[in-house]
Length: 180
Image (cartoon, rainbow, N blue to C red; front, side, top):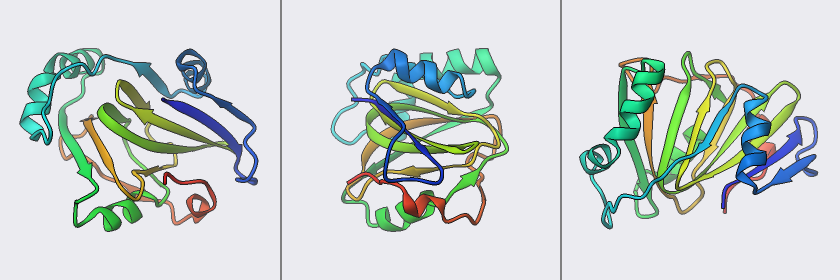
């Protein structure tokens, strides 16, 4: 179940707000300029889908975003617990960073935790299958896939070069809860 937990950026031990209600999550995030919507990830992708299978199954959703926002490229990120690079990838994504473009993800399988550092708060968004999130360009954030990752998400970009991060050097992410 999708969830949003808000913390002060000075106290990671006590949340100031929490909800699993999709409408409440959307309202909280939209107020901060973050797009969060529940879409339908209802296509049968099989046990271990190829990126082409995922793209073909959800081209209609990609086309909607391209038409709406003018995005230029897309790909698929899919990680499973047996991926030999899972620890290195997790460590990389757990470092606070920004992007020069919106970070758009449509989760079609599994789950991941987006952590957004907005002003003096940290918004931890547990995104699961059916969730679309768009983190605005320049927003400091990190992502946790957990120690046993199991997710597939379509990544959509303004930039034809794809995922380009500018790491902030902040240690803030190390103080907040992670996925198991």
